[in-house]
Amino acid sequence: MGQPSISLCMIVRNEEEVLPKCLGSVKRIVDEIIIVDTGSTDDTVAIAKSFGAKVIEMPWENSFSVARNRGLDEATGDWILWLDADEEIDVTEADQLKELLTRDVIREQHIEGIQFYFCSYLEGGGEEHHCLQRMVRNRPEYRFEGRVHEQILPNMLKANPGMQIGQVDIHIYHVGNLVKNIVRQDKIRRNQSLLLQSLEEYPEYRQYHYYLGIELFRLNELERALEQFNTALANPEGFLPVVLSSAYKYKLAILEAMGRYDDMVRCSMESIERFPDFTDLHHLRAVGWQGLGQTGKAIHSMRQALSLGPAPEGYPSVTGFGTYLTCRDLGILYVSVGNVKDSDLYLTLSSLMGGDTRITFEEPSNHNDNAPSLSHVGH
Image 1 (cartoon, one colour):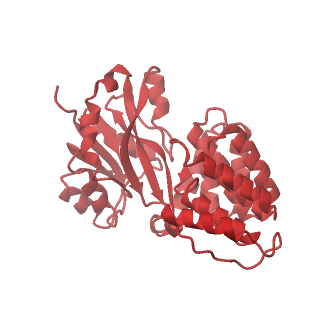
Image 2 (tube, rainbow, N blue to C red):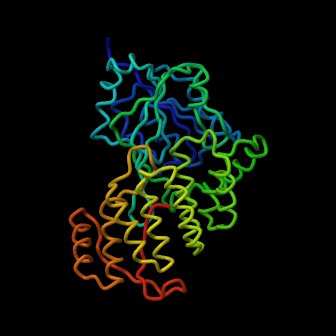
């Protein structure tokens, strides 16, 4: 049996800055490229054609699913890979993809979709990692739904309840969460409009509250963002673990930004009951305790995070929580209580793990006038 063919399907609009890297990362492993362009006014279409892409130009219909499914309808490959223009596959790992798709386990375990390791770059040099599906067998019944944050898994399960999603050890890197790219594409305004429209159409779909909360947090509309996450978490039935754990993490970040450290600690306790092995929650609980001036409890929570190590696959975890960032923040905490020996130990460990051990002090705040800041990336 020969290797399976792969169709790359994408939707784009004014992506000339990032599209070459995206297509360059996959050109050796895909058999065809199908680009649905929804109204580019720059060189996006010309760039896509230079990579041999079939370009379908269609008007924007206020639905990512409609655009994605238009591309899927044209795909002829055995498998369909979809990417956004601000994503790229690790070129040192990509070549193994087709071989992985020929393995017996794919057939024996009824694998119909493939997840990749996803790494999102964050402001300040941080990274958040989790797993996301980016491939599906080419079947006409497998189609996306939802105007924004579109999903294909629900229709896959409806059509084939016994199917499974596999995981490959290949990374996809995402730069779209960097502020310059969000601003460039005006993503917040666009997504907020589509989410409000979606909630009017499907008010019972609480996951839209989660996504709307993210957009409001990006706008620094903290009260409104908190309301959306509270609504989402009030009845999270049907949420995938990655979404539910992410919702708790966002809520903790919002409460920290609001200075509501009592609520932050309470929320961290609730979230840890659900996800006791999610390292980031323990680290953030320590941040809450430190905000309350409870340094001993903060140290205890931070040590728990360190003992857990990096979060298991499947959680939306910040790179460094459970390792060098946690060691660094433990060092900062020990500085605040005058424990030079342990401070030196953990700052040294952080440095050996590749972390930045420089300590910066912020202006004093009401909750603890002399405490150094425990900065943590990855909202």
